[in-house]
Amino acid sequence: MSTRVGMPSVRGMRDSFIDYGLGAAGGLVYAISTALTGSGLVGGLLGAVAAGSIIKGDRGTVISTMLGFQTILTSMTQSNAESSDAGVM
Image (tube, rainbow, N blue to C red; front, side):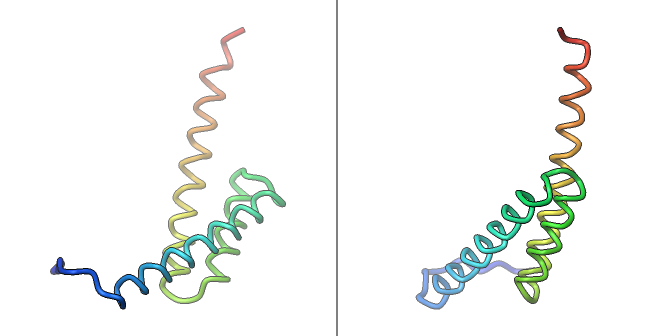
């Protein structure tokens, strides 16, 4: 994989803006979905599926993959924090 670095172009900035907008839309769908279904494992799964199905193509795949990773990581972090606080009074 070769990476090219060059001067910014209008097309490149436009594509980046579109990527940003679709990511923001996916995040908004995820936030609304987890607010309605809960932010646990099942709520995170439903949020990731909803966001990935609304944003079509490769971008939707990337969004749902990223949100799935985030959901598992957040669930594991929360369960570790709860288990370490169990003995503290």
